[in-house]
Length: 240
Ligand code: APR
Image (cartoon, rainbow, N blue to C red):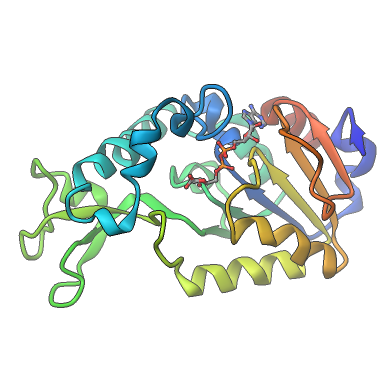
């Protein structure tokens, strides 16, 4: 069912173990784009979306830095939004598909980045070197190189066709199964395995709510309710 405000269905003091699954929509107010929908990055540039596939490495490493490195630079300049801060203030655990590190910047302490982080980088030579560290260290050279061996480095972001970190995925499943309220914010729910987390939370007895500004189609049956609105307004009003 669609409701006007989060408080209607989930008053702030009713739940004590809140878990938020966030997507690109929560960071739009920080100047970061979404991927799908009318002005989504993949919608406007299918070629760029195709370039995000792991099997194109190392040829697509420049495109990876353009997309993910560019996003991270914007995020660092703008900082967390009121919605990120509202989740931190509510003490929510966070499972994020975003790679912008804005939840950590807002003060959230329990954050699982299931699609990796654009603030981190990895050496392409994972067999012999295996370096991983702050992207800023790789970006000291142009094009970004591994500071340990000089080979090309890539943003530590999960690419299409790439396995997610099993530890992160396990932690995400754990958070979803332990919460009493599961709040999906600013995600189209089109990408697995993130989209499997609401059913996990529902099966564990959580009250599941979706906050989405431009919902595309029917609400996933895992959710009890949906608030159609801007995450910035919905979350700040709720956390007040
Ligand atoms: N408030 C709330 N929701 C919003 C807002 C807003 N201000 N602006 C946009 N949205 C919603 C859109 O309605 C849409 O449902 O955010 C969602 C963004 O969906 P996507 O662009 O598909 O982003 P996301 O769900 O995060 O994508 C998941 O796909 O390509 C991969 O790695 C990429 O992590 C990303 C994953």
